[in-house]
Length: 59
Image 1 (tube, rainbow, N blue to C red):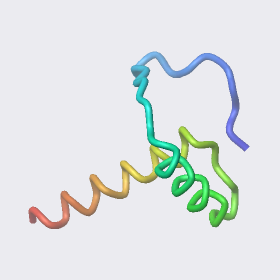
Image 2 (cartoon, rainbow, N blue to C red; image 1 turned 30 degrees about the vertical axis):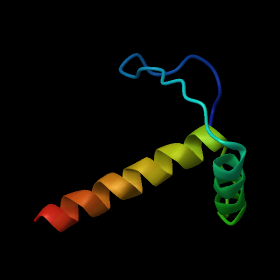
Image 3 (cartoon, helix red, strand yellow; image 1 turned 90 degrees about the vertical axis):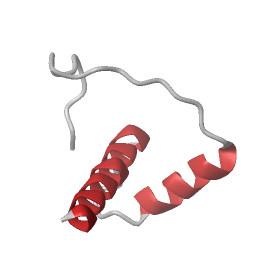
Image 4 (cartoon, rainbow, N blue to C red; image 1 turned 60 degrees about the vertical axis):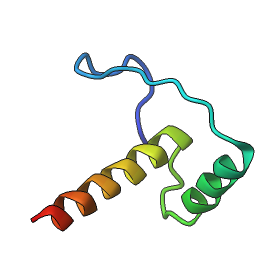
């Protein structure tokens, strides 16, 4: 399980509001993961996957 506490110094906080439907979709997807990540972690994974797909499409 991930450690909580002070974040790495090379990170920046991002605050955003999401519609209830989008939060529900994120929660549904994260519950399918073996480790059931937190919402922020699931959002990081989704963004990382999108960035990787975008990078591969541009090659």
